[in-house]
Image 1 (cartoon, rainbow, N blue to C red):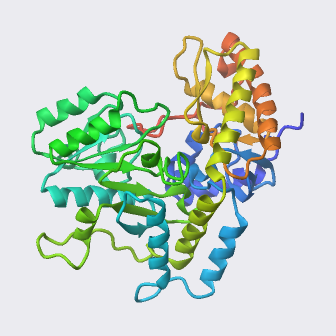
Image 2: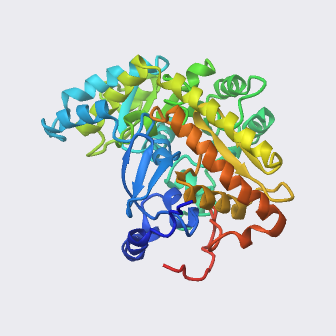
Image 3: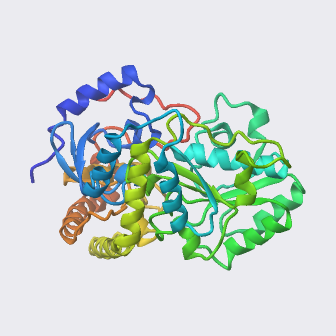
Length: 449
Protein backbone atom coordinates (compact mmCIF):
# COMPACT_ATOMS: atom_id res chain seq x y z
CA UNK A 1 0.00 0.00 0.00
CA UNK A 2 1.25 3.46 -0.92
CA UNK A 3 1.19 5.35 2.35
CA UNK A 4 0.23 9.01 2.31
CA UNK A 5 2.04 10.02 5.46
CA UNK A 6 5.44 10.40 3.80
CA UNK A 7 4.24 13.25 1.59
CA UNK A 8 3.30 16.02 4.00
CA UNK A 9 6.22 18.45 3.58
CA UNK A 10 4.10 21.47 2.65
CA UNK A 11 1.69 20.86 5.51
CA UNK A 12 4.56 20.67 8.00
CA UNK A 13 6.07 23.91 6.71
CA UNK A 14 2.71 25.67 6.96
CA UNK A 15 2.16 24.33 10.48
CA UNK A 16 5.43 25.84 11.68
CA UNK A 17 4.47 29.18 10.16
CA UNK A 18 0.82 29.10 11.30
CA UNK A 19 1.56 28.56 14.99
CA UNK A 20 3.76 31.64 14.95
CA UNK A 21 1.04 33.77 13.38
CA UNK A 22 -2.27 32.35 14.64
CA UNK A 23 -3.05 31.25 18.21
CA UNK A 24 -3.68 27.53 17.93
CA UNK A 25 -2.55 27.50 14.31
CA UNK A 26 -6.11 27.80 12.95
CA UNK A 27 -9.39 29.60 13.57
CA UNK A 28 -11.58 26.76 14.86
CA UNK A 29 -10.50 24.69 17.86
CA UNK A 30 -12.05 21.54 16.40
CA UNK A 31 -9.65 21.85 13.44
CA UNK A 32 -6.56 22.23 15.63
CA UNK A 33 -3.47 20.06 15.46
CA UNK A 34 -4.20 18.73 18.95
CA UNK A 35 -7.39 17.14 17.61
CA UNK A 36 -5.58 14.98 15.05
CA UNK A 37 -2.68 12.53 14.87
CA UNK A 38 0.81 13.86 14.24
CA UNK A 39 0.66 12.05 10.89
CA UNK A 40 -2.35 14.01 9.65
CA UNK A 41 -2.57 16.52 6.81
CA UNK A 42 -2.09 19.94 8.36
CA UNK A 43 -3.86 21.98 5.70
CA UNK A 44 -6.45 21.41 2.99
CA UNK A 45 -5.85 23.12 -0.34
CA UNK A 46 -9.10 22.34 -2.16
CA UNK A 47 -12.22 20.22 -2.20
CA UNK A 48 -14.64 18.84 -4.76
CA UNK A 49 -17.69 16.79 -3.90
CA UNK A 50 -16.74 14.46 -1.05
CA UNK A 51 -13.01 14.62 -1.78
CA UNK A 52 -10.35 16.99 -0.48
CA UNK A 53 -6.69 17.49 -1.38
CA UNK A 54 -4.15 18.57 1.20
CA UNK A 55 -1.36 21.10 0.72
CA UNK A 56 0.88 18.35 -0.67
CA UNK A 57 -1.67 17.10 -3.20
CA UNK A 58 -2.75 13.98 -1.29
CA UNK A 59 -6.40 13.07 -1.89
CA UNK A 60 -8.88 11.92 0.77
CA UNK A 61 -12.52 10.93 0.98
CA UNK A 62 -13.77 13.36 3.61
CA UNK A 63 -16.38 12.84 6.34
CA UNK A 64 -16.00 16.02 8.38
CA UNK A 65 -17.52 18.32 5.75
CA UNK A 66 -16.24 21.51 7.34
CA UNK A 67 -17.59 20.56 10.77
CA UNK A 68 -20.88 19.60 9.08
CA UNK A 69 -21.16 22.91 7.23
CA UNK A 70 -21.03 21.31 3.77
CA UNK A 71 -24.06 19.11 3.17
CA UNK A 72 -24.16 19.07 -0.62
CA UNK A 73 -20.46 18.50 -1.23
CA UNK A 74 -17.55 20.86 -1.68
CA UNK A 75 -17.85 23.44 -4.47
CA UNK A 76 -21.36 22.29 -5.39
CA UNK A 77 -21.92 23.83 -8.84
CA UNK A 78 -25.45 25.31 -8.47
CA UNK A 79 -24.45 27.03 -5.21
CA UNK A 80 -21.29 28.45 -6.75
CA UNK A 81 -23.29 29.70 -9.74
CA UNK A 82 -25.66 31.60 -7.45
CA UNK A 83 -22.75 33.06 -5.51
CA UNK A 84 -20.94 34.23 -8.64
CA UNK A 85 -24.07 35.92 -9.96
CA UNK A 86 -24.61 37.72 -6.66
CA UNK A 87 -21.00 38.87 -6.45
CA UNK A 88 -21.26 40.51 -9.86
CA UNK A 89 -23.85 42.88 -8.35
CA UNK A 90 -21.83 43.82 -5.26
CA UNK A 91 -21.74 42.12 -1.88
CA UNK A 92 -22.52 44.80 0.73
CA UNK A 93 -24.43 48.07 0.63
CA UNK A 94 -25.44 51.04 2.80
CA UNK A 95 -29.09 49.97 2.83
CA UNK A 96 -30.55 46.44 2.86
CA UNK A 97 -30.21 44.40 -0.32
CA UNK A 98 -33.31 43.01 -2.03
CA UNK A 99 -31.94 39.49 -1.59
CA UNK A 100 -32.42 39.80 2.18
CA UNK A 101 -36.19 39.63 1.70
CA UNK A 102 -35.86 36.79 -0.81
CA UNK A 103 -33.74 34.75 1.58
CA UNK A 104 -36.05 35.38 4.53
CA UNK A 105 -39.03 34.16 2.48
CA UNK A 106 -37.14 31.08 1.31
CA UNK A 107 -35.97 30.19 4.80
CA UNK A 108 -39.32 30.73 6.52
CA UNK A 109 -40.98 28.64 3.81
CA UNK A 110 -38.81 25.75 4.98
CA UNK A 111 -39.41 26.31 8.71
CA UNK A 112 -43.13 26.89 9.21
CA UNK A 113 -42.86 27.07 13.02
CA UNK A 114 -40.86 30.31 12.67
CA UNK A 115 -42.49 33.63 11.78
CA UNK A 116 -39.46 35.92 11.61
CA UNK A 117 -35.75 35.42 10.93
CA UNK A 118 -32.57 37.41 11.43
CA UNK A 119 -29.43 36.41 9.51
CA UNK A 120 -25.89 36.48 10.85
CA UNK A 121 -22.56 34.80 10.12
CA UNK A 122 -22.00 31.97 12.60
CA UNK A 123 -23.73 29.79 15.12
CA UNK A 124 -22.42 31.64 18.16
CA UNK A 125 -23.99 34.89 16.97
CA UNK A 126 -27.36 33.20 16.59
CA UNK A 127 -27.42 31.35 19.91
CA UNK A 128 -26.16 34.36 21.85
CA UNK A 129 -28.84 36.50 20.23
CA UNK A 130 -31.44 33.93 21.29
CA UNK A 131 -30.16 34.10 24.86
CA UNK A 132 -30.30 37.91 24.85
CA UNK A 133 -33.80 37.91 23.41
CA UNK A 134 -35.04 35.40 26.00
CA UNK A 135 -33.59 37.47 28.83
CA UNK A 136 -35.13 40.66 27.47
CA UNK A 137 -38.56 39.08 26.99
CA UNK A 138 -38.70 37.36 30.38
CA UNK A 139 -36.75 39.89 32.46
CA UNK A 140 -34.73 37.00 33.88
CA UNK A 141 -31.01 36.26 33.95
CA UNK A 142 -30.46 32.48 34.17
CA UNK A 143 -29.92 30.30 31.11
CA UNK A 144 -30.34 26.52 31.37
CA UNK A 145 -28.19 24.55 28.94
CA UNK A 146 -28.19 20.84 28.17
CA UNK A 147 -25.00 19.50 29.77
CA UNK A 148 -24.85 16.59 27.32
CA UNK A 149 -24.51 18.82 24.26
CA UNK A 150 -20.92 19.97 23.76
CA UNK A 151 -21.10 23.41 22.18
CA UNK A 152 -23.51 26.31 21.89
CA UNK A 153 -21.39 29.46 21.58
CA UNK A 154 -17.94 31.01 21.91
CA UNK A 155 -19.51 33.68 24.10
CA UNK A 156 -19.15 33.94 27.86
CA UNK A 157 -22.60 32.65 28.79
CA UNK A 158 -21.64 29.21 27.43
CA UNK A 159 -17.83 28.95 27.49
CA UNK A 160 -17.96 29.99 31.14
CA UNK A 161 -19.62 26.64 31.84
CA UNK A 162 -16.67 24.66 30.43
CA UNK A 163 -13.21 23.88 31.79
CA UNK A 164 -11.80 26.40 29.31
CA UNK A 165 -13.31 29.36 31.15
CA UNK A 166 -10.23 31.57 31.59
CA UNK A 167 -11.04 35.26 31.19
CA UNK A 168 -14.72 34.90 32.06
CA UNK A 169 -15.91 36.58 35.29
CA UNK A 170 -17.34 34.32 37.97
CA UNK A 171 -20.49 36.47 38.04
CA UNK A 172 -21.16 35.58 34.39
CA UNK A 173 -20.42 31.90 34.96
CA UNK A 174 -23.01 31.74 37.73
CA UNK A 175 -25.77 32.74 35.28
CA UNK A 176 -25.61 29.46 33.34
CA UNK A 177 -27.04 26.29 34.86
CA UNK A 178 -27.42 22.82 33.38
CA UNK A 179 -29.85 19.94 32.95
CA UNK A 180 -29.35 16.47 31.42
CA UNK A 181 -30.76 15.18 28.14
CA UNK A 182 -33.64 12.68 28.46
CA UNK A 183 -33.72 13.41 32.19
CA UNK A 184 -36.86 15.43 32.77
CA UNK A 185 -36.36 15.17 36.54
CA UNK A 186 -33.19 17.27 36.18
CA UNK A 187 -35.26 19.96 34.44
CA UNK A 188 -37.89 19.94 37.19
CA UNK A 189 -35.13 20.27 39.75
CA UNK A 190 -33.83 23.43 38.08
CA UNK A 191 -37.26 25.05 38.00
CA UNK A 192 -37.78 24.15 41.67
CA UNK A 193 -34.36 25.47 42.67
CA UNK A 194 -34.63 28.69 40.63
CA UNK A 195 -38.33 29.62 40.55
CA UNK A 196 -39.12 32.51 38.23
CA UNK A 197 -35.44 32.98 37.35
CA UNK A 198 -34.79 30.94 34.18
CA UNK A 199 -35.09 32.90 30.93
CA UNK A 200 -34.48 30.03 28.50
CA UNK A 201 -33.71 26.36 28.17
CA UNK A 202 -31.44 25.68 25.19
CA UNK A 203 -30.57 22.31 23.69
CA UNK A 204 -30.18 20.37 20.48
CA UNK A 205 -33.25 18.28 19.69
CA UNK A 206 -31.06 15.18 19.54
CA UNK A 207 -27.52 14.00 19.01
CA UNK A 208 -26.52 10.34 19.23
CA UNK A 209 -29.48 9.54 21.48
CA UNK A 210 -33.09 9.96 20.42
CA UNK A 211 -35.52 11.72 22.78
CA UNK A 212 -37.29 9.20 25.03
CA UNK A 213 -40.65 9.21 26.80
CA UNK A 214 -41.74 12.48 25.20
CA UNK A 215 -38.76 14.33 26.66
CA UNK A 216 -38.85 17.29 24.26
CA UNK A 217 -42.57 17.87 24.65
CA UNK A 218 -42.41 17.51 28.42
CA UNK A 219 -39.53 19.99 28.47
CA UNK A 220 -41.63 22.40 26.43
CA UNK A 221 -44.57 21.94 28.81
CA UNK A 222 -42.39 22.76 31.82
CA UNK A 223 -40.96 25.80 30.05
CA UNK A 224 -44.43 27.13 29.30
CA UNK A 225 -45.62 26.48 32.85
CA UNK A 226 -42.67 28.44 34.20
CA UNK A 227 -42.65 31.30 31.69
CA UNK A 228 -39.36 30.15 30.15
CA UNK A 229 -38.54 30.19 26.44
CA UNK A 230 -37.54 26.96 24.70
CA UNK A 231 -34.60 27.48 22.32
CA UNK A 232 -33.74 24.66 19.92
CA UNK A 233 -30.25 24.65 18.42
CA UNK A 234 -30.62 23.32 14.86
CA UNK A 235 -27.03 24.01 13.78
CA UNK A 236 -26.41 20.30 13.17
CA UNK A 237 -29.90 18.82 12.98
CA UNK A 238 -31.12 21.45 10.54
CA UNK A 239 -30.52 20.25 6.95
CA UNK A 240 -29.63 16.75 8.26
CA UNK A 241 -32.58 15.36 10.23
CA UNK A 242 -35.12 16.89 7.85
CA UNK A 243 -35.14 19.79 5.40
CA UNK A 244 -37.25 21.60 7.99
CA UNK A 245 -35.02 20.56 10.87
CA UNK A 246 -35.39 18.21 13.81
CA UNK A 247 -38.41 20.18 14.96
CA UNK A 248 -40.29 18.74 11.99
CA UNK A 249 -39.14 15.19 12.80
CA UNK A 250 -40.23 15.43 16.43
CA UNK A 251 -43.30 17.60 15.75
CA UNK A 252 -42.39 20.37 18.16
CA UNK A 253 -42.46 24.14 17.75
CA UNK A 254 -39.75 25.87 19.78
CA UNK A 255 -40.10 29.50 20.72
CA UNK A 256 -36.76 30.27 19.09
CA UNK A 257 -34.43 28.19 16.93
CA UNK A 258 -30.92 28.75 15.66
CA UNK A 259 -29.53 27.60 12.31
CA UNK A 260 -26.27 27.56 10.40
CA UNK A 261 -23.62 25.11 9.22
CA UNK A 262 -25.10 23.39 6.14
CA UNK A 263 -27.54 26.26 5.56
CA UNK A 264 -25.20 27.84 2.98
CA UNK A 265 -23.23 24.71 2.02
CA UNK A 266 -20.10 26.10 3.65
CA UNK A 267 -20.66 29.81 3.03
CA UNK A 268 -20.88 31.92 6.16
CA UNK A 269 -24.55 32.36 7.01
CA UNK A 270 -26.58 31.52 10.08
CA UNK A 271 -29.96 32.48 11.43
CA UNK A 272 -32.04 33.16 14.51
CA UNK A 273 -35.67 32.29 13.85
CA UNK A 274 -38.74 32.32 16.02
CA UNK A 275 -42.20 33.44 16.92
CA UNK A 276 -43.09 37.04 16.11
CA UNK A 277 -44.01 37.67 19.77
CA UNK A 278 -40.34 37.38 20.71
CA UNK A 279 -38.51 38.36 17.53
CA UNK A 280 -40.37 41.69 17.25
CA UNK A 281 -38.42 43.02 20.24
CA UNK A 282 -35.45 43.48 17.92
CA UNK A 283 -37.58 45.50 15.51
CA UNK A 284 -38.88 49.04 15.07
CA UNK A 285 -42.65 48.60 15.35
CA UNK A 286 -43.19 48.01 19.08
CA UNK A 287 -43.48 50.43 22.00
CA UNK A 288 -44.59 48.17 24.84
CA UNK A 289 -41.15 46.78 25.73
CA UNK A 290 -37.56 48.08 25.67
CA UNK A 291 -35.67 47.74 22.42
CA UNK A 292 -33.33 44.76 22.09
CA UNK A 293 -30.04 45.24 20.26
CA UNK A 294 -30.62 41.84 18.76
CA UNK A 295 -28.17 41.32 15.89
CA UNK A 296 -26.36 44.04 13.98
CA UNK A 297 -23.55 42.68 11.85
CA UNK A 298 -21.82 44.51 9.04
CA UNK A 299 -21.45 41.28 7.09
CA UNK A 300 -24.57 39.47 8.31
CA UNK A 301 -26.41 39.94 5.03
CA UNK A 302 -23.61 39.69 2.49
CA UNK A 303 -25.39 39.10 -0.79
CA UNK A 304 -23.29 36.15 -1.92
CA UNK A 305 -23.80 34.30 1.38
CA UNK A 306 -27.57 34.79 1.20
CA UNK A 307 -27.49 33.69 -2.44
CA UNK A 308 -25.71 30.53 -1.30
CA UNK A 309 -28.40 29.99 1.33
CA UNK A 310 -31.23 30.45 -1.16
CA UNK A 311 -29.64 28.04 -3.63
CA UNK A 312 -28.99 25.50 -0.87
CA UNK A 313 -32.54 25.76 0.46
CA UNK A 314 -33.93 25.26 -3.05
CA UNK A 315 -31.82 22.14 -3.57
CA UNK A 316 -32.95 20.66 -0.25
CA UNK A 317 -36.53 21.52 -1.15
CA UNK A 318 -36.48 20.14 -4.70
CA UNK A 319 -33.99 17.25 -4.60
CA UNK A 320 -33.78 14.10 -2.42
CA UNK A 321 -30.84 15.37 -0.38
CA UNK A 322 -32.06 14.17 3.01
CA UNK A 323 -33.07 10.80 1.59
CA UNK A 324 -29.58 10.42 0.09
CA UNK A 325 -27.91 11.26 3.40
CA UNK A 326 -29.95 8.61 5.19
CA UNK A 327 -29.34 6.00 2.50
CA UNK A 328 -25.57 6.52 2.30
CA UNK A 329 -25.27 6.76 6.05
CA UNK A 330 -27.13 3.49 6.47
CA UNK A 331 -24.90 1.80 3.88
CA UNK A 332 -21.82 3.17 5.62
CA UNK A 333 -22.93 2.08 9.09
CA UNK A 334 -23.88 -1.42 7.92
CA UNK A 335 -20.55 -1.91 6.18
CA UNK A 336 -18.48 -0.65 9.10
CA UNK A 337 -20.36 -2.78 11.60
CA UNK A 338 -19.75 -5.85 9.44
CA UNK A 339 -16.03 -5.04 9.38
CA UNK A 340 -16.02 -4.47 13.14
CA UNK A 341 -17.63 -7.88 13.65
CA UNK A 342 -15.08 -9.59 11.37
CA UNK A 343 -12.31 -8.28 13.60
CA UNK A 344 -14.16 -9.11 16.82
CA UNK A 345 -14.21 -5.45 17.88
CA UNK A 346 -17.90 -5.00 18.73
CA UNK A 347 -17.01 -4.03 22.30
CA UNK A 348 -14.42 -1.49 21.20
CA UNK A 349 -15.56 0.33 18.03
CA UNK A 350 -19.13 1.55 17.70
CA UNK A 351 -20.99 3.59 15.11
CA UNK A 352 -23.69 5.72 16.70
CA UNK A 353 -26.22 8.38 15.77
CA UNK A 354 -28.65 8.96 12.92
CA UNK A 355 -27.54 7.62 9.53
CA UNK A 356 -27.47 11.21 8.24
CA UNK A 357 -25.10 12.31 11.02
CA UNK A 358 -23.00 9.41 12.29
CA UNK A 359 -20.11 9.47 14.74
CA UNK A 360 -17.99 6.69 16.15
CA UNK A 361 -16.76 5.67 19.58
CA UNK A 362 -13.29 4.23 20.18
CA UNK A 363 -12.92 2.19 23.37
CA UNK A 364 -9.91 0.58 25.04
CA UNK A 365 -9.56 -2.98 26.35
CA UNK A 366 -11.70 -2.11 29.38
CA UNK A 367 -14.45 -0.51 27.30
CA UNK A 368 -13.53 3.04 28.27
CA UNK A 369 -13.46 5.92 25.82
CA UNK A 370 -9.88 6.39 24.66
CA UNK A 371 -8.17 9.34 23.00
CA UNK A 372 -5.20 7.09 22.20
CA UNK A 373 -7.35 4.62 20.29
CA UNK A 374 -9.27 7.43 18.59
CA UNK A 375 -5.97 8.91 17.44
CA UNK A 376 -4.76 5.52 16.22
CA UNK A 377 -7.98 4.95 14.29
CA UNK A 378 -7.67 8.40 12.69
CA UNK A 379 -4.03 7.77 11.87
CA UNK A 380 -4.71 4.44 10.18
CA UNK A 381 -7.70 5.72 8.18
CA UNK A 382 -5.69 8.75 7.06
CA UNK A 383 -2.99 6.39 5.81
CA UNK A 384 -5.65 4.70 3.72
CA UNK A 385 -7.03 7.87 2.16
CA UNK A 386 -9.80 8.90 4.56
CA UNK A 387 -10.22 12.07 6.59
CA UNK A 388 -12.97 11.19 9.05
CA UNK A 389 -13.16 12.90 12.45
CA UNK A 390 -16.79 11.79 12.19
CA UNK A 391 -18.80 9.70 9.71
CA UNK A 392 -20.93 12.52 8.32
CA UNK A 393 -21.96 11.88 4.72
CA UNK A 394 -22.84 14.51 2.13
CA UNK A 395 -25.03 14.58 -0.98
CA UNK A 396 -21.81 13.97 -2.95
CA UNK A 397 -20.88 10.62 -1.35
CA UNK A 398 -21.51 7.89 -3.93
CA UNK A 399 -21.85 4.15 -3.44
CA UNK A 400 -18.29 3.76 -4.72
CA UNK A 401 -17.02 6.28 -2.13
CA UNK A 402 -18.80 4.43 0.66
CA UNK A 403 -17.46 1.06 -0.52
CA UNK A 404 -13.91 2.43 -0.64
CA UNK A 405 -14.39 3.87 2.83
CA UNK A 406 -15.50 0.55 4.27
CA UNK A 407 -12.51 -1.20 2.71
CA UNK A 408 -10.11 1.37 4.18
CA UNK A 409 -11.72 1.14 7.61
CA UNK A 410 -11.42 -2.63 7.49
CA UNK A 411 -7.65 -2.25 7.12
CA UNK A 412 -7.51 0.27 9.97
CA UNK A 413 -9.47 -2.09 12.22
CA UNK A 414 -6.85 -4.80 11.77
CA UNK A 415 -4.31 -2.45 13.35
CA UNK A 416 -6.82 -1.50 16.06
CA UNK A 417 -7.25 -5.18 16.95
CA UNK A 418 -3.49 -5.66 17.29
CA UNK A 419 -3.24 -2.54 19.45
CA UNK A 420 -5.74 -3.99 21.91
CA UNK A 421 -3.20 -6.77 22.54
CA UNK A 422 0.06 -4.83 22.64
CA UNK A 423 -1.06 -1.25 23.35
CA UNK A 424 -1.84 1.69 21.03
CA UNK A 425 1.51 3.33 21.74
CA UNK A 426 3.23 0.54 19.81
CA UNK A 427 1.36 1.61 16.66
CA UNK A 428 0.80 5.32 17.20
CA UNK A 429 3.27 7.83 15.79
CA UNK A 430 3.54 10.70 18.26
CA UNK A 431 1.17 11.80 21.01
CA UNK A 432 -2.57 11.06 21.26
CA UNK A 433 -5.04 13.81 20.42
CA UNK A 434 -6.65 15.76 23.27
CA UNK A 435 -10.09 17.01 24.21
CA UNK A 436 -10.79 20.64 23.36
CA UNK A 437 -12.12 21.68 26.76
CA UNK A 438 -9.12 21.42 29.10
CA UNK A 439 -7.92 23.86 31.73
CA UNK A 440 -4.26 23.79 30.67
CA UNK A 441 -2.30 22.61 27.67
CA UNK A 442 -0.35 19.43 28.34
CA UNK A 443 3.41 19.75 27.83
CA UNK A 444 4.56 17.44 25.10
CA UNK A 445 7.72 16.83 23.10
CA UNK A 446 8.07 18.99 20.04
CA UNK A 447 6.70 17.10 17.01
CA UNK A 448 9.17 15.91 14.43
CA UNK A 449 8.25 18.40 11.71
